[in-house]
Length: 328
Image 1 (cartoon, rainbow, N blue to C red):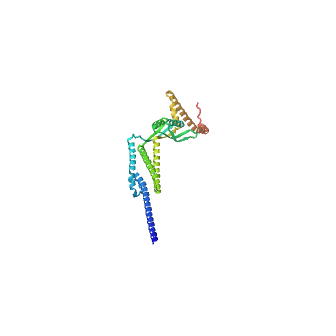
Image 2 (cartoon, rainbow, N blue to C red; image 1 turned 180 degrees about the vertical axis):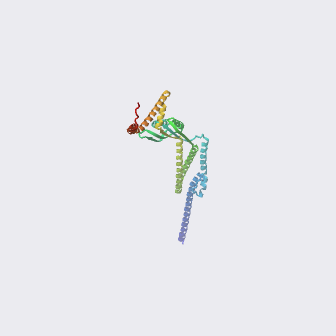
Image 3 (tube, rainbow, N blue to C red; image 1 turned 90 degrees about the vertical axis):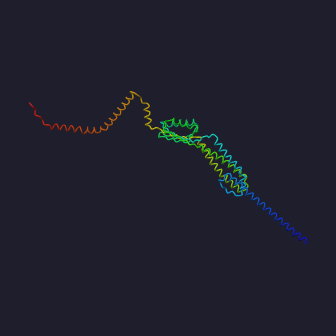
């Protein structure tokens, strides 16, 4: 009887111990699940708070406490961006201008003018980005088109030197002020870099696979936006640091060159009149020779057929005349 009571009591104690262990394990599992859920909510809420509520990443409602905890850091970052913009506004503004020009030249020696343009570009520390030169059948340059890049600080001086390198046909100048665009792009790049650093910090603190995958997607998106902003920033820097000038060089026509040369070498006074009279006499002689040359075939025909006919008619007319009687 005593043995039976002992066995029954042992069974009851074992059952109690088993129930106690089961309850303890269930409590630990629930705590771990709550910690994981809270961690995921913290990461999503932090990024949502960073974006100022403009982006919705599906953060759970359980992350409200994490959002409140991260609010001071978000306010600090917002204050940093605001202070940066305020510093840019109060500092002396440097103007950023994109300048372009076009110069059309006329020259009787395109190759020489092309060399003069090259010397001007070298002196102004510029570069030739494009070139197109055309030649005639004899290999003489007739047309040349160049696109040059020069520092913006020497743009006006370069344009003036190019206009004086040959006979100027046309010159155009255009400028676009992009100061606001440059400042805005710089501020956006700094803000995006700060946002990217914060996302990297969140990735380092992530504890679950779900958080890691979600944060990496945000990291990729923000890195792409940053690359796009930096490309725009680099393009603006290049366009404002160097100006573009397009140069067209065209050869004069041969008759224009000859007229200019004759006008330059033409003497004055009596010699001018004598030269003019000789030219007029030569023109008259040339005209008369042309007329005589045109009438000569007709004259030959008349000489061959007309003269015999005229002699025959004259002889016939003499025979028909009556003889007059002699007077005493």
